[in-house]
Amino acid sequence: MVSMPFRRQLFRMGVGAVFGGAAARGALAASRSPDPAIDEVARLAFVNTHTGESLDVVYRESGRYLTDAIAQIDRVLRDHRSGEVFPIDRALLDQLDRLGALLGAGARAFHVISGYRSPATNAMLHARSNGVATRSLHMSGRAIDIRMPGVPLATLHRAALSLQAGGVGYYPRSDFVHVDTGRPRSWGARA
Ligand SMILES: [Zn+2]
Image (cartoon, rainbow, N blue to C red; front, side, top):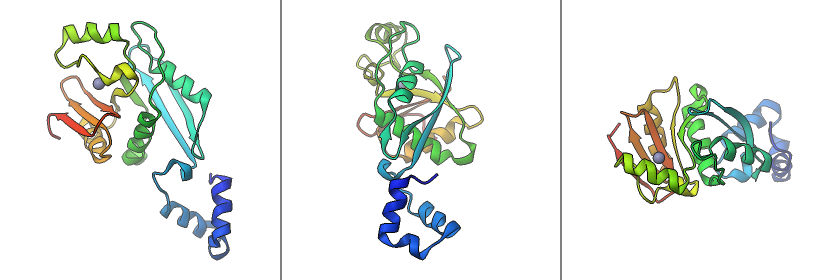
């Protein structure tokens, strides 16, 4: 569906008068931009690998974040150990949306190994594994560890790197890719 404001804008520009029907849709597809203001509908699907919960929601429409959908996402991405819900960075959701788009028709739900982590949970995990940073962006809702069944981890990793946004960590032994909204950087084995 094309959002109405954008359609009106196109007509104001005279594009609608030149192209009709399928041609206009083609012109729209060609003019798709990462700018959320003209990206009509953004949808995300998650499966929480610890709780088994799944969610498939439209979380942004015509550049507006949908509060109810965001609340559902925050809940699925909560710290499953403590039950604490924390607001997930919307920029991270947009990164995941772009990642899903890059994977195209093969894209499925993101299976989530770790979303938000409370300071207590992070400290516990850090004590267990030197792969867990003391000041992890998971603690501020700005990081997520994911895999996507049906999509090779290396493919997911390459796609995440190609976004050139935030941090990307590759954990093939644990079978996940870490994505965050921190400064652009990457670590882990090369794909
Ligand atoms: Zn992580």
